[in-house]
Length: 188
Image (cartoon, one colour):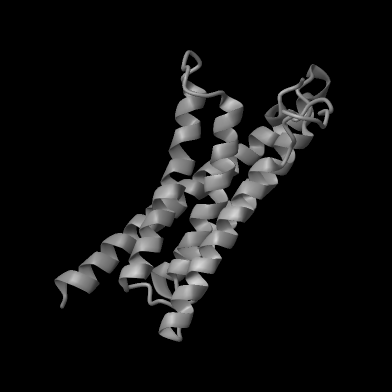
């Protein structure tokens, strides 16, 4: 059976068969669960939980940790070709799930307020997630054969755009956290 993350060949349905897109269903299930918890918090407070509340900070920190895992773990696994801790394809799926769930949690953290540095950080988050979805589409559609060198170059070009956007996002997120800590704790 071909590697589902490689984007080649057809996959057979049946018991134990790996199907493309399963990681998107996992992400959707996690997003639905987070939304349900957020709705409960909303109903209890009769408003969106404030970003500076315990719930707001908690969901923001958890979302940021997932995003940090997204940006690092898959890359580390790709660099370690001798690693025995999961296949690269499995880590790519993990990358895709956390790359959707983490930003969604950060969106919930904003309490739907998008101004200042936090607004810029959220805009960068949306751009990086959209770029990641484009990358996933290209990754599953670009065959790995030598005849498609031009298409593979297109994927490499996408990668050169996606990575700097991701690091710009993390720079903005870190600035946001430092500013939030400074103004929320030290200025009180």
